[in-house]
Image (cartoon, rainbow, N blue to C red; front, side, top):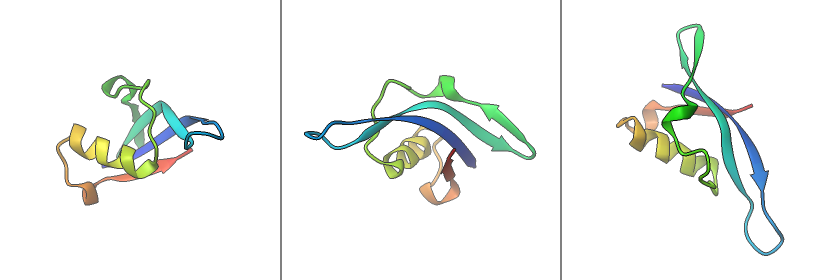
Length: 71
């Protein structure tokens, strides 16, 4: 499964930078399908790796079967 997402970074000098997913798409063959409604977009991720694990859990797939990139 291939995913692409856009994000908005936040953070201050006191706490580590985080980001929220603004929109996320699943690549299916030659089409991108918006799946933003399937995740909590208010959650502040601390890393792309954390989002990767979240998607694997959400779709009940092995972590290695997912590809994730940011636009």
